[in-house]
Amino acid sequence: VFRPAAIAREIAWLGRDRSFGAGLRRVGAAHLPGVRHILRLPTDDRDVLRAEQQSLATVNEELEHLLDSLDVPMVVVDGERCVRRFTSSARQMVNVIASDIGRPIGDIHWNVSVSDVDEMVRSAAASGTMAQRDVQDRNGRYNVLTVRPYRTPGGRQAGAVITLVDIGAHAAARTALQ
Image (cartoon, rainbow, N blue to C red; front, side):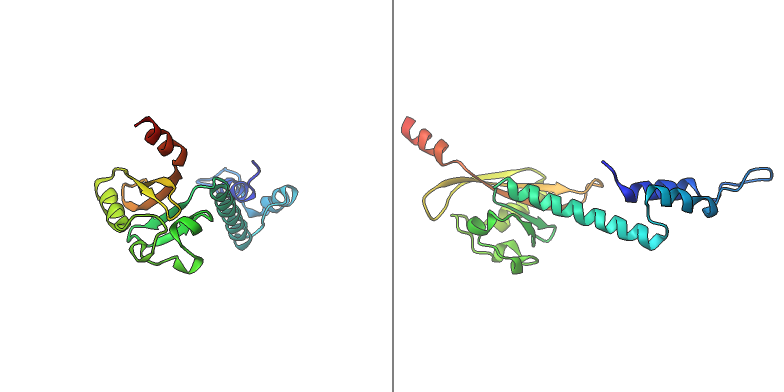
């Protein structure tokens, strides 16, 4: 994958003044514009920051498209249990809209039979373990509600991911066997 921002950082690092003593050749910015121009990379720090911002925006957009293509109702909440992000399929099951971002998850009226999702998120985050429950939506279809906590690489609690997976066929087969 061609990443202009990463290449620009590498070239800036290589082109820094590395002369620690007498007799070493100074390699400075005077040698870089030609290389940056040939590779069509940003030439100043603002351009590098713009390229990095564009790269992050592209990655964020790709992540949103990936999550929406999964067709799994998913809600991401932060450490205070407020909605940070959700997939388009969560709109019907969880009853969320764009203005719900930043709103506590306990304040949202779900379209499935779960009244204590806030407590599920709190206990899953506190224990660091996944919580699961079978729930039924308003149309009578069965789903598995899963709450998975996630932490930063440093171990700090960063929030939770709530998913709903349709198990209607599985539940019907289980009922038929009983």
